[in-house]
Length: 102
Image 1 (cartoon, rainbow, N blue to C red):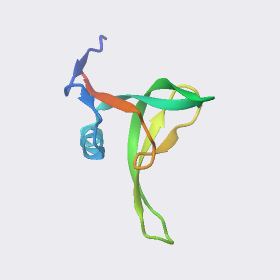
Image 2 (image 1 turned 45 degrees about the vertical axis):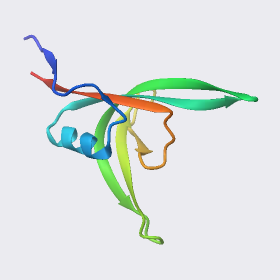
Image 3 (image 1 turned 180 degrees about the vertical axis):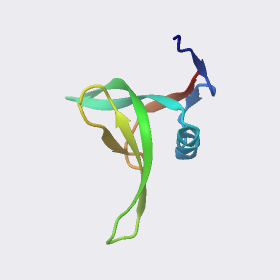
Image 4 (image 1 turned 30 degrees about the vertical axis):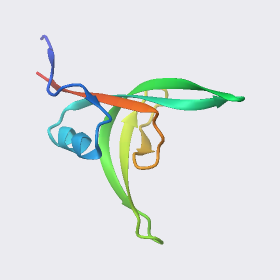
């Protein structure tokens, strides 16, 4: 049996949390690439990684009542999924593509 992948949406730069939630609701696979600036002495270096977004979670801090958007991800480095606070992480650049599996 042959599996074909086709893009279900265009390449998106700086995807919003709404874009991520909409694509997850439609059972799409989301590939997410990002860069971070890492300080190296007096200078900084961009490092990047590609991950798969598995799910979206909203969390409320009990003391303050602040809400945060988390994405559950698989990065290929760990056996278990990880979580990223999408509101607080400081990506230098980020992009995504969603796919349907047909």
